[in-house]
Length: 377
Image (cartoon, rainbow, N blue to C red):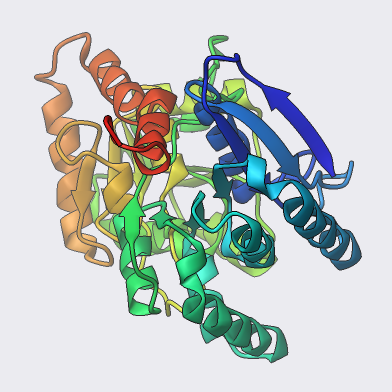
């Protein structure tokens, strides 16, 4: 267990517990690091975290079991000194229960993401076992003062699954190489001769909609519009199909400075996510959306699941009906037309609005509202 303490003596103490942590790589790890950094702004944070493997993979089951067991023992012997605790996902419920046994009046908050709620709906032995585990958590949810969902969509899924006292607190914008990128790259070759481009970036998986956009929306756009797709692919068949389509340029994974330059250069950045069976996966929030708009990207995103929370419609981007090819084509053309009338500082205004709404200060303040007693209490 990696334990670290940061903060000043005049800040209230907070225990932060996460099984997702670097050097493991993933969305949950990014969220945990960013949340801990946000909480540092108003709490003296003590971290109990389980680092991943050096190659970026998460720790194995034995390492996780040992982490949970050690954290439970520490709670039983020293839990009384922790009056405020944040657990980064529901799988840490055994640790929270141990803390409740010795400090029942403490404020404990657990964060839920989309997959935390829907995983039990999948087929197979592990989802079935998780369903039994989740049923126990649901019966004993009195252990937690509040449940924090990362988006309104996730909150709806959590309530439907039987969780109560659910609040929505959106993630903050990651302080990453992408959002800090200031080294412009020449990405003119990515346009492949097209006068106007639409950029899709992120993992190349069906629900992200890049292939759907290329098949159903791009043919409805003028011939001088090309689609640029950047991001890793683990599905060779989908990649081959995408690359076979006309007016599509697939770049694969690119470095942060190149990606930032692609976002700033594109006429439109699209997140055309399409509905899929919820038991397969959901867009818990849509981090790509706030990354794109924080760089001044002209963003169009599906009005779907967590993306609704990641886009301030008409301010940081525009929401479009998912799976409606004509609505998407119309939105792209409307964005092209609007750009002819917009002021030179329009992109800066988009970036500023995004960085203010999804700041660490906003996220930390929302958590403080749940963890600190009201004035006079």
